[in-house]
Length: 601
Image 1: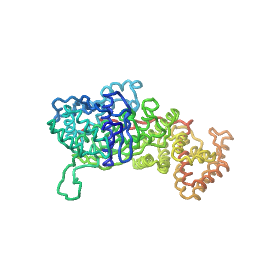
Image 2 (image 1 turned 45 degrees about the horizontal axis):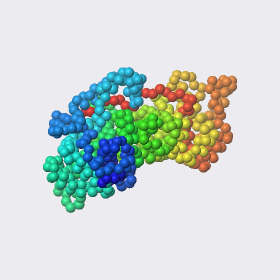
Image 3 (image 1 turned 120 degrees about the vertical axis):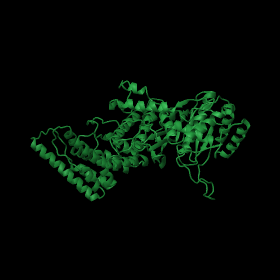
Image 4 (image 1 turned 90 degrees about the vertical axis):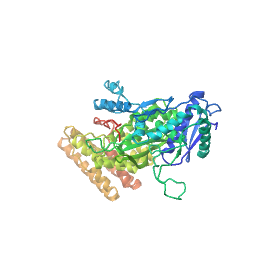
């Protein structure tokens, strides 16, 4: 019971296990801080269990501390704090009104002041809106109330409050429960019943495991043995476990309302997603530093886009904190050394209630290997570029929706094929947007190279081949470059080759056809160069270098070694990207239009 490592079992294979672990880690952190000051608490995923290791072990007597509770009591018209409540109380209606006023004030700000990262220093009008900012845990508290979990939340909070007269006894019981694995819940329940009888407590032994915390559980047939189906009801759980899960949700969960991709003109459905950070090996201090910033910067969005933005923003926030020297953990090379993924529960609005529709995870960009501050800053630039591109897409459009799902597959699957599918389809969208003068952010060639090398170093010889670079440049100067100048109303010298990328990718499945299509492009490219040179008497306003026979020979050799599809995908990806010296069009509206997210479901 008195030791330096504690364990929480994985019993559901959902984020319910993760929330319990975070709750226990926060509890142990309180005990250390109250007795010996701040010490490192580390959480690790060890397969079938989570391990919580302490820089200094819990010693006998550490449990003799005054009663504490980080969870606030949610006061509503029907729920009032218990007599003698010593914790924080939140007036739900007042906080909801504050939240509504905050978003109303933000809507009056210019678009650039509503983007993540905007500060009052740059936009003074933002200071007035920030003065109305709701509590950092408001979305957790709102979810508890709006998803019908407030009765269970109040029950476990009142039970915790009732134990203030025997708090050391309750803490000893919990220390014993998590001191060994498997966790002996039956023994803990027996110990609780004895304590309850001895102290004359009225708290119930069990609590209902609500779906806010336990997404895979719900009312139904819940029997240990398949010996009958005559009882329909809620499952039971030892109440301190549910209390600790609520604590974990407040420390690691991010509930968000899902925005509808279609403008309905009204409130629309109130679908919801909850994100929970699944750790690998991270200190609680590092987690809390990054979580606080991440929670502030993740805004409501449409379903697929919000998944992507969550993964990219968490990684960017971790890098930002690491570069500022705030996390006590080193970056360690890759984000996957610290955080495995974001577990996601999607709840569908059914009118009078919400119902779990899907459980999933989205991976983080584990190909990022940042070991120096220079690499860290470069990766942050890369992430900002991806955030701009993803933010420019809308689930309202079927083609853009498919692009978003493809990009999400790339993130979760560490899959270059999915990324090439994204860049290939995005090239067509890019040309269409440039034609209409719309916002069309592009990948930077240097960032593309970093991303591809992070996935497969074997592709480096392709990118280093001069012939590959020259032909990718020729594709760029035949497509996006003249299209960009046309969109700016500037005269163009060379023709725009619409559909070139799509045609090359379609024929890349057949090496002979791909080489033929590439040869036809090269011939037409050189022929156009000669015609323009002749038209301007050898002094064209924009000069393009010819593709040489060496370039062709080198690319054909690459096709023989790596395959037409690999070379074709890379040529299109780099051909429709921009070089560092090329201008990037200005940004469009913010990635999300904020709205009050506290409306009752």
